[in-house]
Image 1 (tube, rainbow, N blue to C red):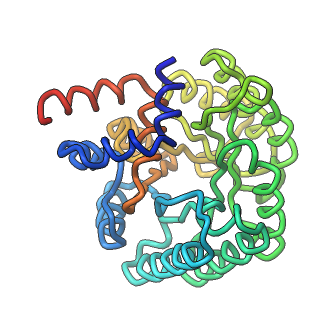
Image 2 (cartoon, rainbow, N blue to C red):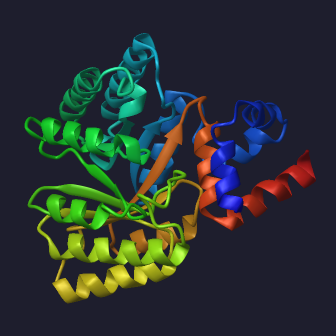
Length: 306
């Protein structure tokens, strides 16, 4: 019930205004968001890279309904990629892009063209792009755009959300040579007709999807903070004979940083998903919905600093 309430709040304008204007909110957000500017993103990326961690940068902002906004987001990503190259961080840093931020709701072709512009900039910088997955109504469109992008940029990453009923089949389609696939649990409020509702069912689906990816010929990107799923990943690695570097772990900025460094220290490829930008509200609400400990952290901060 708490998760459902938080996900509902993520799209509620009244609650959004209250949270965004609370004096403590921006202090709390710093745990999960690098900052508002490209300079902030570069600074945090440099710190993480120095600790042996890889990075995926996400410019916050989604559900774009204006072509000008989609164009501005595209240009911002191009500038970010140029800055990564100039700071010699591109080799360990990719970018994550939500198609809704670059015009998907307006026109799929617009989103595809804008994403291709970002991919071109990434290729010039010497790095890659992963296309984020959003709510289930956009899944087919997003996978279609990824297929089109891979014709010119075969390294474009896809994201599969384990809570969807369809995801195991999607993993089978994507577990091919050269295919980079991020597997996460999913962070949107979805109906029972398309998504598993209990934590146990989602976890079981995650394991089934992970097995498919690990047994396939692609490059699995295991996005989880769950110690049990990390242990299961290691078992699959042993069973399939995968070498370190033929897959990677991914975790969110600000969550389990010690575990991130432990995995990197053990020789594992460990990538940190780092968001930045002003549009942090929806992202924060989804992070709170994912883990009760995040809610506790936020409420404690409100109690002590508000």
